[in-house]
Image (cartoon, rainbow, N blue to C red; front, side):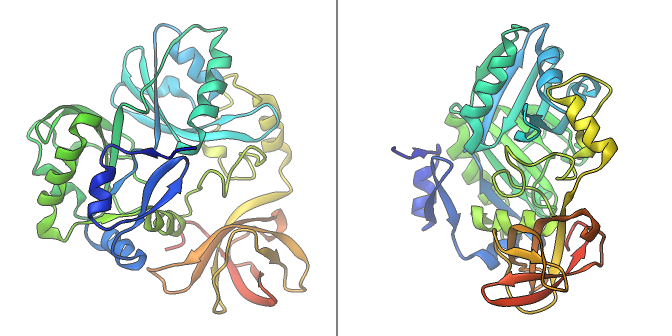
Length: 362
C-alpha cells in the first residue's frame, strides 16, 4: 500500500527529516535528534506537523445526540469555542479511540481522531448514525495540523495575528479567525506535550505558507521542527495515553483511569457495563513509574513485584530526556497501583527496580 503524504512532505525532506511510515503516512520521526528536539519544546518552542490526524465534521439537529451516544464525555456542556477530551467505547468494554470534540457552531462539531483509526472511527460513528441521521463529512484529507508547543509558543504565534489574543484562549478552548494571512484557521489550546502551546488547523493550500511564517516568527526563540519521536517522549513524561500502546480495543476505560471523562448522566455505548466496573472496581490499573536502577523500560516488558511475580506489563517506556532516567506507563494489579509502591521491570534477564509515581512523571 502506498504511503499517504502530508501537504508539506517536501519541506520535511528538504529539512533532512528522518521519514518513517506511521499510520499509513510518510511522517518525520526526527530532524536534529530526539533529545535536542525534546528539550527545545520543554525550554523554548518547537513545531510538529501532525497533519496525519483525522478530522470529521458532524452537523445538523441530531449532531449532539449522535456524539452523546458514541462518546463517553458530556458534549452537551460544550459552548461554541470549547473543546473536550473523550473516548469512543466499544461494545466489548474496550476503547475504539480517544479523541477531541470541538463545538464549532450551534449544531456543528469537529471530531479530531487518531491517524491510525480514521477509517475505523468513521465506520463506527456512521453505524450509530443510522438511527440519528446527522450530517457527517470526513475532512481529514483537506486539512493540515501543526502543533506549536513550548513556553515561547504563544509569543511566536501572536506575531502572526491581530485577530486573536492568544493569551485569552484558555486550556481546551479555541478560536476560528484569520491567521498568518490565511482566512480560516482554528487556533486551539489542547496540547499533548505539557509544555503549553497551540494546535493550528488550516486548509492544505495554506499549510506551506503558514509553516514558513511560524518558523520565521519563532526564529528569535530558537524554534525547531520536531518529529514524532520527541512527541512520544514528551507525552510519556506527562503520562498521556497513546492509542495502540496504553489504550486499545481491549483496555477498559476505568482501568486506563479515564473515569474523569466518563459521564453517567447520559446513556452512551456500553455505559451500563462501564458504570458497573466503576462501582465494583477493576483488577488492574494504568500507572506511571520511574526507574530506580539504570535501564530503559519498553512496551511489552513484564512488571514484577519485589518477590519476582508477574503483576503486569509495560505499555510505554523511554529514557526521559528531562529526568535522565527511565520512565514508563503500564498496567499492574490494582493492589500495586498506589504511588511510591516498589516494583521491578524485567529488562531482558535483569530485574530492575522501579517505583510507581503519581502523574505527570516530571
